[in-house]
Amino acid sequence: MIHRCKTFALITLLTCALSAVSLPATAQQVLRVTAIPDEAPTELARKAAPLMKYLETKLGMKVEFTPVTDYAASVEALVNRKVDLAWFGGFTFVQANTRSGGKIIPIVQREEDEKFRSVFITSDPAIRQLADLKGKDVSFGSQSSTSGHLMPRSYLLQAGIDPDKDFRRVAFSGAHDATIAAVASGKVQAGALNISVWEKFVADKKVDPAKVIAFYTTPPYFDYNWSVNADMPAALRDKIAQAFLSLNRDDPTGKEILELQRATRFVPTRVENYKGIEAAAKSAGLL
Image 1 (cartoon, one colour):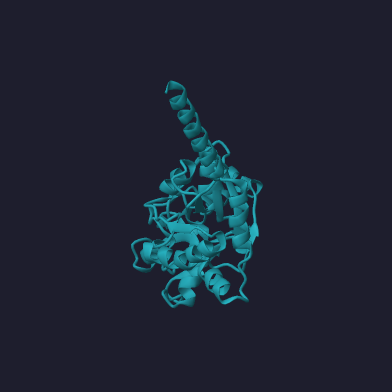
Image 2: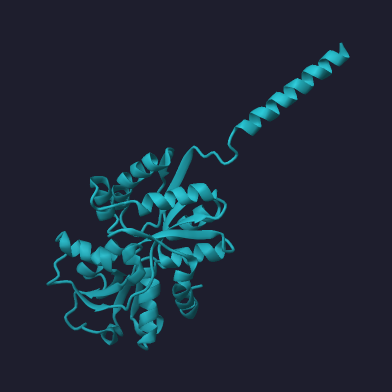
């Protein structure tokens, strides 16, 4: 009887082991996605919906978009693997890469992100150059924003202007569209933001360029990307990258997604592209 029980136990153990082996160890049922909240939540959701649906089709798995409250939360979410894929600005990527000890990997960026720029805007006719900002109230976006804070601050410092000493007040609106609203309403005399958001607002007639003008555009720099954690299986990482690289404006779905993402197309990217932003962050005392 004892021998029979031992045999049964052994068969059961072997059956469980074989069952475990037959299941793919890297199987993933849901791809969790987030993005830095650089625009209003409704706009982020509108831009994300078609892309999430497209990724579901390409990856053959459920894709969930989870908004976060601030830039820091997006960094922590990917570093701690609460999400699998994140849309970062260049500075947020650098923060995540540093915070994770180099385990956050950028996989694709928009072609536009190879030569991204920021603009300074104003509704004050007395402001026509960066030097005119001295003694004024000026708004950036989020403190962790590349195009809404880090790079504008970097170029101000290069021009011999220290925002913390030379501005009457430094404000942080939290998002690019909020910076436009603050300038247009007169809450601040000037602001710095992402050029693509500015151009979109002008094109959609959401701002009057006769009343609010862009008076300075920065030199170009690398910016946004889609990043993953290095712990993601290479096969899935490559599949995600290929899904983005396959987006084409000749296809109706691709055209819709690329227009919402304000992209001509997506191209591969790498960590080395963001060394300039890392240097700027360290120079500005932000990293």
